Image (cartoon, one colour):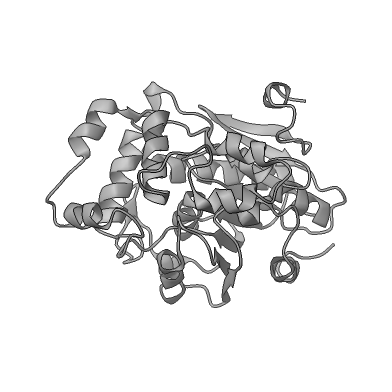
Length: 328
């Protein structure tokens, strides 16, 4: 049992071992209960919350469900950034963290190919990485990824003012360097349920928590926002939010074009019917921009974190992955 498990005995109980570290980030390896597929899974979560939502508790764990199904799983946990990390950019997260961690996972697993799975903002980063990748990415699965910011689902007037350059947050962000966790929490609460502050702060989470015997675990995770790099936030606001460069195929990271046409991995994009944070119109436009010949878009019932907490692999995902993961 690692330090995290000792501090939180009910969270993240799936057996794991750290196989790579960089700065605050850790690459965790979760071996399959009985290995059935040759192509491992590499999970990327958001920068806004802690990654343990993907392994919350027995019966409420996406990681556990994948290992029970016979997949070796790697999870990149970016950790909690400190003040000294306020300079980290999207370029850094994609090229120095995700890319290097995928290389390590490939070497550790001795696999010839990898499936990359991104959740929420982790899906946005996973897409950027795959567009730039020289590693053998067999499959790309994106759960609720915010990609098209032409029509944001909240704070519309602020977003419009930002696009028209009537307002700018750059100076404020520069003064902070690292955006404190409390400000991240307030921003997320405001966006998902304006001006209402509750323990679970959003109907997206309340709907699941009311049905769950472990609602307190969900609430605990919701309240554990982490600081956010100011440099990365400026890119998200200006390059994606303001100029919508990712979906317009105009984004560059590390001097390289994040060309969505370069993505040739088999693609599965999943959105949910009641997602208040990343509604369908932020996600679906990717299907017309991607280079993948094998592409599938699936809309299922649920909220933003429903897929992470179901405790089992949905039938559509089980069959989609099985056909593309080389059964042993």
